[in-house]
Image (tube, rainbow, N blue to C red; front, side, top):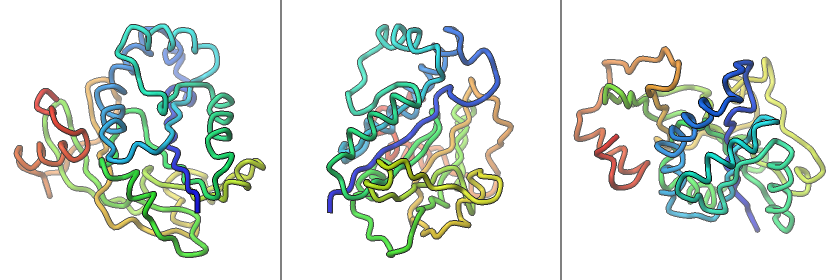
Amino acid sequence: MNRKIVIEINFNNYGMNPNRLTREWISERLDVFRTFTLRSLLSQTNADFLSVVKLAGGCSDIVEDELAKREPIPDHIRFGTSIESKHRINAYIEAADELLIARIDSDDLYHQSFVQQLHDYEFQPDTVALVNQMGYLWDAVEGQMASVFHRSPSFYVFRYQAKDFLDDYRIVIPGKGTHGYVTELPHEVIPHRNYVNVIHAANTSVKKVPVKDRLTEDDTKAVLAEFLGTGTANL
């Protein structure tokens, strides 16, 4: 079976904040993306995947200009509008049997083995979604990290037959349509601690790293090495 992996990232295509279309906001968030999520993607032990970073309409020229000022990004990680991202995915899966779409925010991390896990995963026949319930919460400003559990977090994967996706079939999350309802779909739980939810200086998160299950400094560095590769001492 020919299985394709896509990692979908919403950069600024959601939300009502008008600043998300400005050069200042885009430049800052690109730096955040490069510091965190991009390093996680580049650290994957298997680079056989496509990542689409989705943009709001009307800002592509600014994004391209800002990207040109920075170190080039590999071709399998592409910025574009929702329509451009759809076309890229369709071209990528044209000869495939199955498509897995993982999602992540533009400032969070997946374990360096995550793509390989998805290539290797053996599904039950009726499974629609994979859920990563175990991960870490990391305050990159204060240097604090704790292991966390969420029944239905935003770190999930949808499973499609490629032909269905090409025919514009899309999985619909029940209830309010948010990630907290993904577990109402036929799903399986990935039994690995696969994600890091990042608190950093540029976000507005009110999350706090819990004292319970907080990691030591050495353990935090060891975890980051599994998500970001080597050279994490400057984070």
